Length: 296
Image 1 (spheres, rainbow, N blue to C red):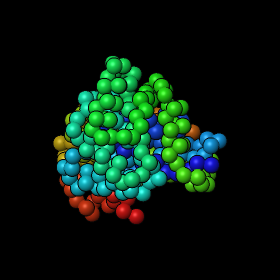
Image 2 (cartoon, one colour):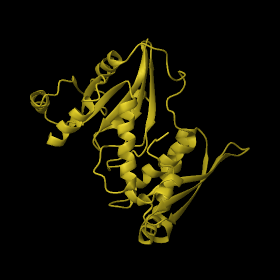
Image 3 (spheres, rainbow, N blue to C red):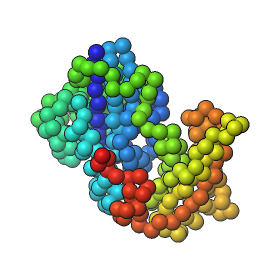
């Protein structure tokens, strides 16, 4: 039986979380078109007859601008070093850049089995694939390249089989009925943050964190959830709330619907917006909000 952990690494918005969600068959990571959607390492577990793949979704590789992004990059690097294999996700829709060659080379240098998932082939010219593969080879990159489309489900079985070939023999790391290592409370916070990412523009989503203060199931089966949306500036708070509270009500309504699907029960959701100035650059606040770079 083949079993092991696969670090899923790539630039921001390469499609890592979408690919993992489709492969696992469950939503284990939130998705949005904005960078920094994934802030933590999140495990997604795929069970097959031949074994178990534990995908470790990581924050997208991003230029460091504050303490939070530094912690995110530390999480990505630590996850890569601790895995049994690496799946580097390369956005095929974007032009290849020198930084792509450098990043692939950096993780190849760890000496672990490594595969390149070349994504988004459903929205790009077919002739671009062999051209990019040739450029990778000419740059000294010898890892196999698997062109895939998570949205269309194209070549995902081939990708899965190639990943299993990289893994060592061993026993499953998790029971078969587990699809993620994250708690319901964590996923509730992530669902709320996803809706903020999708609804609001510019800097607001990146400066927002979500803290669940209360998560209880009442006797009538309804989940009662109270959470704080933490932002960095008072004008951000006004934008998050919106005129007469409409913006926040809309985002919370969408989040509640997804929470109900995730939990399989009705949800009574209460949201508050709080300002913690420059929290992304304050180590104590980052730890308080649950960001530690996976140092443990």
